[in-house]
Structure formats: structure tokens, C-alpha cells
Image 1 (spheres, rainbow, N blue to C red):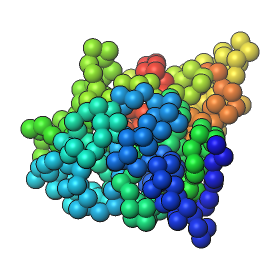
Image 2 (image 1 turned 30 degrees about the horizontal axis):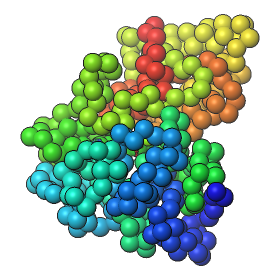
Image 3 (image 1 turned 60 degrees about the vertical axis):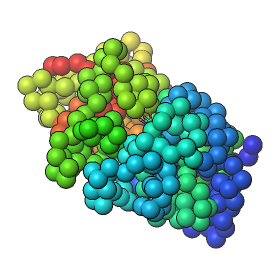
Length: 351
Ligand code: TXA
Ligand code: MG
């Protein structure tokens, strides 16, 4: 299959993408978080195609994207008052809510579950595509399964060219990591995946919120409630290790820098290609030839935006051993460390 690539500014981009979606095909499109790989959420065959194109296990459910708040009532069998509050405050935006589903949503889309994940994205191109196509769009991140999520149309092309009908190129995304997922089907809301909207944001609005214990402390005996959280996502091909100062975890101390410099030099001495993940304001403290930037400074917004492209860059240069600074686990930092630790297969050295 030849994948059509069109910028969202081209005249016929949305009409072509809408036709493809209505005919059961697949279109990758930008959202404010990461690029999504879209298909008709109510068409079981479109969902099957999504799993096949990504090489994704079919027990890992898809998020259904809508453009109008009223659409929730078509898909969810009940809408708890807490969900109304969440939607009022955070939609459109980077929040996915888990509801009990109506029969209209096929099990192929929900990975066999009786619940459905729904998100109303704020990216204008995403909203326009959902409206113009008239289709609820099931969309996982538009990466090949196991690769970092795509923050540009080029990332999507690298992973899925020839496997999907079309890529809508709306430029780089804004946030860079996937939406926060919150489950409102139980007595107390539970965060199943940390994201741009943090636990503090949620609890300021709705009071007590749990975090799925399986995502705080990786433990093989705990089963994450978001099936996708159990897979080793986001992994670069090289082996990534995070270095953290036990005495001040939120800081890049001299200790961290000297350890990273030593490990990278040892790897290079053994003839291995080593890379260092850092931010521009720290970069001149490292002696490695391969410095890969996670943005200008260590603010959560900066690092989130560049995290996945930095992990892809590690693959592009063929890095075999990768050493990264650690980040503050507060707020957005928690979502970043969740992704970084997964990419590292939980390898963290305390110094
Ligand atoms: O920001 C995002 O959410 C992006 C953009 C494209 O919207 N999408 C995204 O989709 O990250 P994906 O498929 O890569 O991640 C969806 C996550 C998976 O971990 C999946 O297991 C979980 O959502 N999920 C989906 N439906 C669920 C359900 N009914 N119950 C629990 N977890 C669910
Ligand atoms: Mg994904």
C-alpha cells in the first residue's frame, strides 16, 4: 500500500482523509499529545487493521476520539457526575476517561473489555477530522508497537509508511506525551496513566483520586488496569540507564554528571557507541561525543515535548548504551519519569 502524505494546509487533505475513514481505512493525524493512528471506532474491521498496522497485541484497547461532548452519551452507558466535572474542566484536552460502554462500541475496539476509553482532543486538526468525517475515531499512538510515540508526521512515516492509507501532517505536536487516563467506573476515580493533567490537577477538582499501584512501582505481580501499561513501551534499541542522586533526586548534581561521564567513557573505551540524554543548559558539562537534547532546560513542558524524539534519535545514531539524567517526579515530572523508566526497562543507578 502506498501511504498518501498531505499537510493539513493542503486543500483536499481533510476531504481525502474523511473519505478514507468512512470507507474503513486508516489515517494518522496530529493531536495535542502525540500523533494518533485513526480508524472508524464503530467498525470492528477498522480496529483490526489498526492492530495489524502497529503490530499491537489485540488485548490492548484503543481510545475513542470525539469532537463534541454530547457524543459521550452515544458511547458510554452511564456518565457519573464526577465525569461531568472532569469533562467541564479538562475537555477538549489531554485527558482520557474510562466509562462503561454501550453495545454500539465493538469489543474489537475495547480489546474485549466492557469499558471504553474516550477523549476529546483540543488540536484543531483532530477536531476537524472527527467532525468532517462524521466518524468517532479509534486512535492509539501512531507508532509501531514498542517504539516511542510519534511527535511529528516524520516519526509516523518512519514506523508506518506502506502500512496505512494516509498521514495528515500538522507539524510537531504541542505536549509530546500521551493523555492522562482516569477511570471513573469505580467508587473512587483512578489514574491509569499519568500525563499532562496531573493527580494534583484532578484532586483539586474532584477530591480523592487513586493512582493505579501497578504504574507507581513496577511489580510483576500487579496487573495494570490500562492493559497497555504492562508492555515495555517506548524502548530505544540501545540499553538506557538513568542516573539519579539519591540525596537530591530532583537535581542534576556534580555526582550525577561525573558518573554519566565515567560510564559513557568506559563504554566508548570498550568500542561501544554511547550517548548522553540531557538538556541544553547542562550539555557542556558532558564529555561524550553523542549528546542528545531533551530540550533547552529541565522544565517538564520542555522535556515532555522532546522526550520521544530524543529516544528516536538514540536509534538513529545507533547508540548502544544510553545514559540519562533523572527528573523531578512532581506533577508533570511524574509522567515523564514514568515514560523514561519504561524506556530504561526500569534501570536506574543511584549515586
Ligand atoms: O494522548 C493519547 O492518549 C494518544 C492520542 C493519539 O490521543 N493515544 C494513545 O493511545 O496514547 P494508546 O493506544 O497508545 O494508549 C491507550 C492506553 C493503553 O495503555 C490502553 O491499554 C489504555 O489506554 N486503555 C484504552 N482503553 C481502555 C479501557 N477501556 N480500560 C483501561 N485502559 C484502557
Ligand atoms: Mg501508545
